[in-house]
Length: 210
Image (cartoon, rainbow, N blue to C red):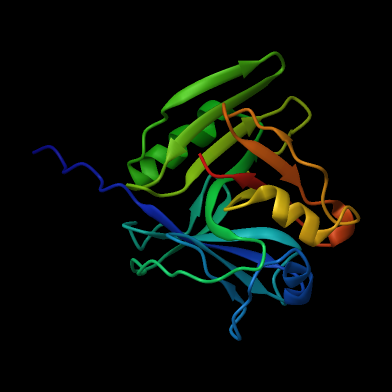
């Protein structure tokens, strides 16, 4: 008998180590329990966790799964969408970036664990990108293969936050902590990168809505 197809999972939260005050400096509202509520997927700040993105929580997942190609993975129950007034105008996470030494290996692991297929591959010379969408309306996972990465496991690298008014957010945060906005790869959208001086410990960018 053939097994039933896996239900597509959804990323409910991303765990990051660091100081909540530094996220507040870039205009993110942080709850008393260290959560940055976003529609569909939130960021959870754990001061005791390693610096940077260290784990993700997925719903619709086999509870026996504790890692996906080396990424610490926690099976959780689906969460209700949460709306929050962030000073930077953030509403949702657009995508999370995963770094890997093998696009084929990592994308196969994501599909096997979540049921989310590889939607497309983009070749950029020595770099390749693959894209999954986890769940209806859920977060896009951008998998990036680079030749200088040699580890045999993947890692969470950064996130992009959609904001209602990018120019206002950039002006509010200030040039010491964020770059000027520029055209994004996605047609008709613009993006600004949070500087390392912000001390978030992970790559973060703000982007205009589609």
